Amino acid sequence: MKKNILLMSLCAGMILTGCSSQSDTDSSVKEVSLDIVVKDEVNDKELFNETLTKEGNIENLYDFLSECDELEVVFEDGSYGAYIDSMLGLKQDFDKGPWWLYSSETNETCKEAGMCPAVQDLEISDGDQFVFSYTSE
Image (tube, rainbow, N blue to C red; front, top):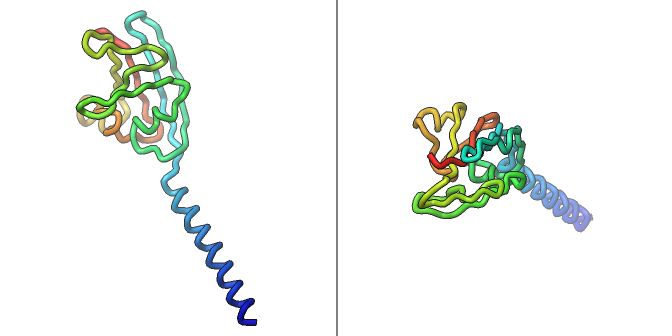
């Protein structure tokens, strides 16, 4: 009888531990939707204009873009952190241009600062809108 009670207690403990671990994992996973527009201003073309929804441990723009295979984003590390080096096959020339720039009229941080910070520093909210411009200006 004691063996059965001990065995049932052990099973109950394992179940509770499994449920606890699952809820810890789920708390960091969230779904984020962003309206994304990508413009090639050098050739006067709109390359992308869609709302993308991604799920994961997404806290900033870098996390979100890292999940966006459809945008083919390539990051490079610079003195201020990661920056967008290439998107949709268009690679920037860091010294001469064209360059990748981005802006948002809905993201609180971008609005308060008057510009968007580095992708790793830019916290995002569900529903934010971003415009990525490949530009030589």
